[in-house]
Image (cartoon, rainbow, N blue to C red):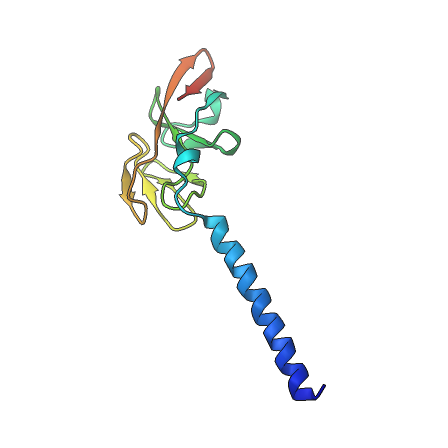
Length: 136
């Protein structure tokens, strides 16, 4: 095999490897996963984890719980409807998806900024002593 043929073969192998890896990374973002965002949940969260004007993301149960005002708790799926990423940060102004920057209202789950075009699915949250019981 000549040097030119060997270089061509190595380049072809690298290009194929990069293409396959890139496809895997795109698949990780996935398409909006309606099944994951609407899956049934039954979880208990310590209310102390949810500060006023902030929230808590429970990745294991795919939920985010917010406390927009003192004593008012809201719960939503933590799965972004854009491409199925888990939301990552909750501020007094927004629930933020780190993958593509979608922002959601912490009181209603409504879209504040895209690319998401659907709200976060709401869950029911009930205060039971020092625990928040999230269902839905």
